[in-house]
Image (cartoon, rainbow, N blue to C red; front, side, top):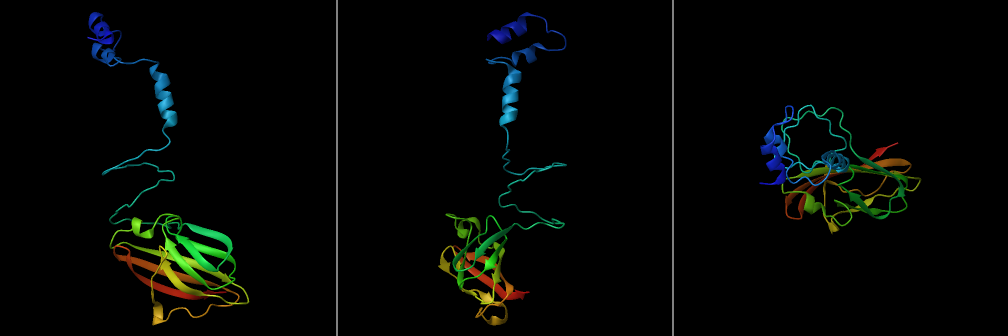
Length: 203
């Protein structure tokens, strides 16, 4: 027997503390309350795996990876938008892990290619399974000279979208904000069907 259990067996239990409860102190090497306080202070995140039932819980800024929900009701959901004083030109990277809408507020300075990826160094292919779909929106400000999107890439590879009306963009709209919307459906590994619309003029 260990010392704690020897004591627990040898003396009457004080107050309402049982000998079994005293035995739980076996192996304690420092103040229990100090250990508990330190543990609580260091617990800034909780990772839950498997099936969990949360009742009347408040989740503050949770990260939920690949959730599957049935019959969910969303009331006024927010969509993360990146607003950037950037002029569209060259290759514009759209990071789908951090935004649903990308809004460039400076006047475009040239035609551009939109490249959709998960994030820098992370492919869209790696976060989507076959049958998954996402929708992204790119909002472009044009000044007196109108520019437009000339190509669409996913993870740096060219994908030809199917455009609403059957015609790809051939020009932009001057002194307006043009909106491009793409729904990307993963049909096989690194293979997609993309449905595009735009530029839709807002002025």
